[in-house]
Image (tube, rainbow, N blue to C red; front, top):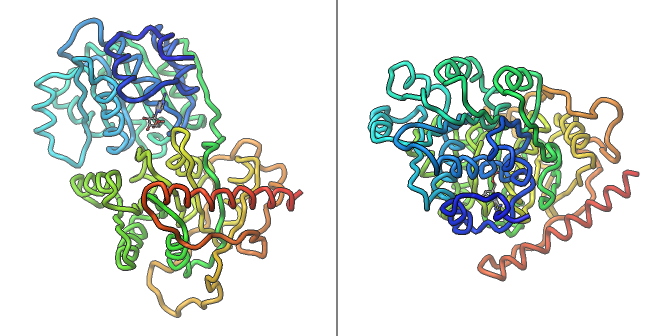
Length: 454
Ligand code: AMP
């Protein structure tokens, strides 16, 4: 199905062409018709599926007709980064329309936001706390809103935003279109959907399958050797841009510093940074100034860096859903990408949970010539502290009955493949061609694991 079938306003069609989209993604194919009809929609889709355009395009189409100069569409998102990314999508896809979008979030001065709001905008992309401040102070008027979008609702719930959201809802007209997007559907989201959506259409793209273009691998290692193993992996792998996840802000900061010391162009992105520094880190990662970005889940939420070649879970995430979100950062929009997860013996339960959700065992890899036997130093401060035992917050679907096939204990002799090949030149086509080799090997090794596990 092509975009022409949606009968969008010509200016919106021009925006789609300028963005280089030729075919709608599955969530767009499903969501755009009901959203365009004005129906309330519950969308179950994770980052990387094209869900932003699934709501942005019909909103731009709708707003291309009718009044201007007042807020007609409000998108609420959990983080500043995601808000910026959605705002950029509106600007990008709506570049040929006269519509204006602006962002509203905390951590930056309130006055410039007030000035922009005074100048007028039809689309506001906001995080809940600052939006509520504006509503209380009367510096934003949402009384003539046509469409409300709650994006990444599960994340907003996890971050404790639901009371704010319910307060915000009291300032909105009852008669409006509401769209709710979430990667997962725990009871709290179901309840919110029941309360705020009217006769909704539910659209869903596979919520558990991560991008099929991603090849996954586990690297069992002792806690104190994680940084050395990461350095060895980076050294031996042809990477273009690498997003590394840590469990805490502290670990993100420390690891970013260590990578820099080791000679990598690295930056860390964590909640303690000022908005300017966060933006500089993101921009630097996007334009290639930084090859490696180290981030926590919350800080990395919504990062859309289409060229990410590798995601490394320095620390395993707390839930299978978070794993899928993280690796959704690579292999976006049909590009191929690799996801490496460093795992310690403490991570066994979470690895099982992830494998159950993925319905497939993950291959265990080792790095050739890496000395896994180096003993732990007697004293290495906070950084060497083992991570807390993760416990899944929500039971993944299908979990609990049987363990995944071939899912041996992490950190055991389950390691099967020898990765990677020696480093190759990293420019232009050469780098691209060289980058393909380890991926092929990874896939082959994964098949081996499956066969071995049966
Ligand atoms: P999202 O899931 O909204 O974060 O989108 C993930 C990525 O896919 C973004 O880089 C989008 O620009 C891109 N994208 C969205 N829709 C399409 C499409 N129809 N064709 C190609 N790329 C797309």
